[in-house]
Image 1 (tube, rainbow, N blue to C red):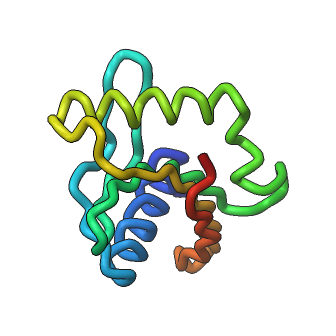
Image 2 (tube, rainbow, N blue to C red; image 1 turned 180 degrees about the horizontal axis):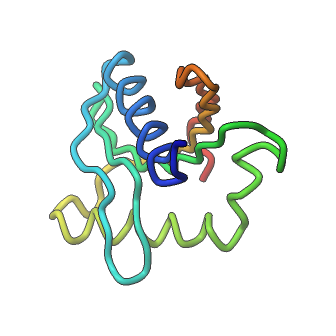
Length: 119
């Protein structure tokens, strides 16, 4: 049996590969401060930073994974992105916040629903 943590890690790995396949670099994973965590930080070919929230599910039995991103979670993501930029000496750089829903089936393949610029 696969644990929730393993499903989550598998989803993040699928999204990291998706970013790489689309010309982005992954520069940080699971960056954490007291206020929360950013799943993936990337850099687009144009030089904009990406902050990606990944929600992974084995089914949509409890709704679409992106429904778990509440307005409070979205505001937290924005604050975390600004904190990452500040603490990594990139204040003032272009950035966007993206979300990815990953559905992991029994064969552990991942179907990705990637949404750019949600904030």
